Length: 157
Image 1 (tube, rainbow, N blue to C red):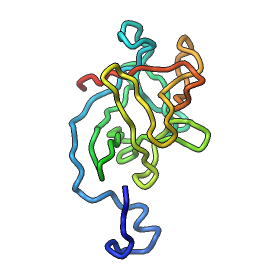
Image 2 (cartoon, rainbow, N blue to C red; image 1 turned 180 degrees about the vertical axis):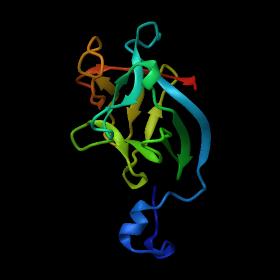
Image 3 (tube, rainbow, N blue to C red; image 1 turned 45 degrees about the vertical axis):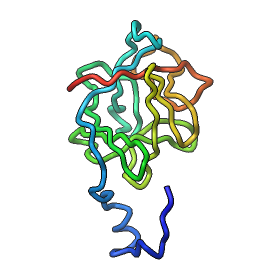
């Protein structure tokens, strides 16, 4: 994604620019929840993409009733995922410096790749969605290949 700063002059202060939503040129793909599996054949359901109940910005494995509604869309030729939960409205799936997966304002969003087999990788650090242990519910999610990889299957809301 390349921008020529000369062609994009801010219309507001830096702080206001960072809080603003991206332009409406995005192409939404509808709402869904993300089922998380421990295998590419999607036979072993681990849980769903959710958010930590205390630290709302951290993504975690959650039961179906706490699965977040997600919207996938294209913006500037990259695929982003927006959280549609009422408490986290307009937060975007991203990866922290230490590989934690979480929800950030749009200016902190990172791109993701969902392969046909369900492998879900961060294009920011090139690592796959993972957990430290499949059998431990409520875990934080990571984009880190050294941990146990998860496979994603979008499901209708």
